[in-house]
Length: 419
Image 1: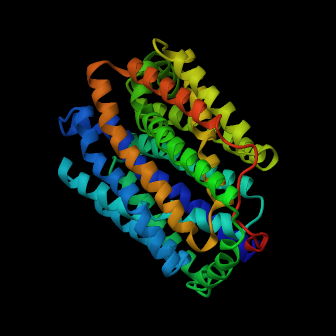
Image 2: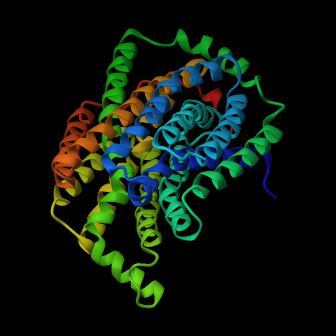
């Protein structure tokens, strides 16, 4: 029988799954349906998603501040119920402006998860690398399921249900989270304050300088890697729509008994899901390696992997394009837990949610700015130019990560972890 501690971690993982699912439902809807249904170009539709991603970033900081001042578990309840209601409302949109407003509100509530949920994960349990990796896999499955679920519902009921169903499920999860953690809401703040007082006096001048150096590296790589993550996860359904036409037609024909026109959206969503799901395995490997070897060597391997596969992608199509896309997504997903691992090792417990908030303000603000970049590059030069840009970004990350020390400075005390 599952105990309360295991159920708490499961609910946090489900929250990460839903967080990424909600923010990427529109990517598949825009790529496969709305550009025809609303007669609005794909590049133009991306503009309506941009404010939501800015909200995803900018509201991370106040979410982290509220969590540190009030309650992290309380903010998780607000996340589940708030994003569920926002998604259901977005499903009723009938114009681009209405869906843009809905996506903005989704972004506001989505901003809660990363500074709050990751702060809980890094403070409550030991084996931080594997815990973050496991949690990250759930987030990546949310990314993957957005394409799979939306593609299926487009073919079998309509795109609006891709907002309705997860919305209702999230509200139910919020109620369950409140039932499981209601006795702890507000209490975790007291323990964090006690550990912070002990940590502050332990930092030497050398440690502070090293902490500053690593912090700069964390935020620089956060910004650059966000360009890669957003470009690949948001644009992959459209990339596959263009590059895998022959492969998709063959699979669709097999599924429908000879008619290539049927199940196309389902096949595209399924191939996207397959790439994201398999690439998620990289996070488990990275998490294990972080606990064993530290972040520097692991980060350099992951960055090199992205550089190679992005450089290979221009001009490819069908099966080989699918294989190379899997390669660069292994790198893109594999890097996700590394910066969170470093923050978890370095950040003071009493302020950890706020520090994660700052990290995700940077990350998701860059995510938002990346959408206009993808739209501009796609409209003027196509996806091959985008792949060259992403290869350059991976090279920049590789250079910056080479400056990391072999051993991280740490403010975390052993007493913070309870399991």
